Image (cartoon, rainbow, N blue to C red):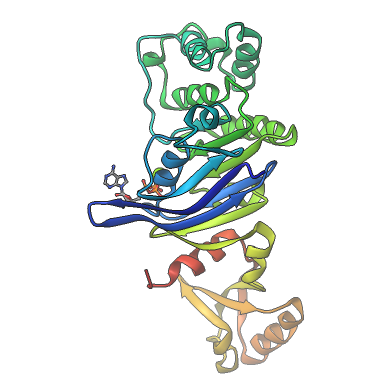
Length: 300
Ligand SMILES: Nc1ncnc2c1ncn2[C@@H]1O[C@H](COP(=O)(O)OP(=O)(O)OP(=O)(O)O)[C@@H](O)[C@H]1O
Ligand SMILES: [Mg+2]
């Protein structure tokens, strides 16, 4: 049984195809990344998964439970950290987490609530009114709220937006532990190095369609080779190396190398042409290169 099964989901908003036939199977135990530019449809898909919005057509199930026809069972298997910072501002952090537990029928949940607060560095704010918290602290409460019922499937919609470095690390440690204990994690983020480090598989959405779906390592291998970034003086880049050039900006010249064996001939050609190397860096392709390449196409 899949953790999340998404079958040909479409969502239309007055002429706009926010989701245009999305199908994805996320297996139990995965750490799955859902990436895409602003407006790609990530939050729309998560709202449908969470039962907060209805798909125009298609089906979604969580741990085998349809999110529409079997809403309560689906919802109890799911924890969602929403992108928007919204919650009832009249309660303290602890009260908020107790109420959320009550919503799932959990009465004596304080031990787990304490553990969540401890892991998210919220303990000192337990008795603070949520209204009085900073943005990053509010985000922590949203994460805590999603976890009160120990859901097997956890979906986080940009959990680290506006969050300081320390909480990011604390958060990923905790979420990583939950993943190792068997929880399925689905993450959206615009921090691609975060996705690259954490996710074992990634789907990229563009204009409501899945345009890439693969393991993180296979995606990165699509952009093979590396980039040699040079700052030169003395002479201009020789003609013979122009074919390797992919860009130049701000005085830096970027050459694409298909392998390390291409490095030496490039250096020899530079020396022969009388170029002086003022600065040189060899950079490996990363998820950001893949993302830009996939999203770069103008087709919709
Ligand atoms: N309630 C709504 N009514 C009308 N259009 C909507 C509604 N919600 C979302 N949209 C549109 O659907 C598209 C997808 O939006 P969505 O919020 O899912 O994008 P996203 O991938 O989460 O973007 P971001 O990275 O900015 O969070 C956008 O064009 C958005 O304007
Ligand atoms: Mg969004």
